[in-house]
Image (cartoon, rainbow, N blue to C red):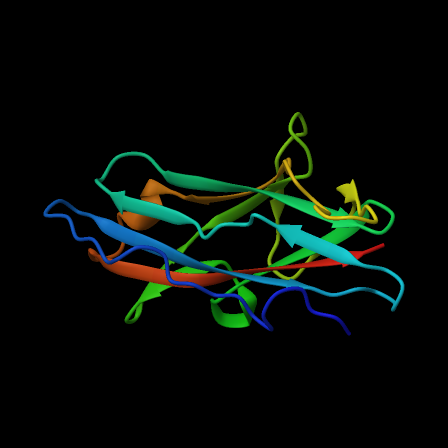
Length: 172
């Protein structure tokens, strides 16, 4: 098994924010783990940033995306997303309060966003082919987007909410 980067990459984004309105500060930790299916297959993720949804002021939804690059030995890969909620669900929390969120993925610039289900794989995504020399992957077109609905945020008290979103990619 080969890991790219640290065994787990998690970084808290930003600092806690508070709003005098019905505000919810939401921060995500994005975990990145890439595993080759067999020894000769490789996969690389580059430029995936943490996602900070900011402070909710009581109107509409919050959403943010991270553009990154995925390269695999033969271009094709699968992705599985899990969250820090019970059973890997997509949820952020502050004490006992939880807010669900949705995760979407796009494999290239003009593709449609695909809604991901926690723990379920999406197969046959096409990234870049790993080249023999560096940089292996640049100018990525893959996108992960997180959305949190206003109706869900209105049900919880104001506070600093955080959670972890982990993406696992595997070459095919």
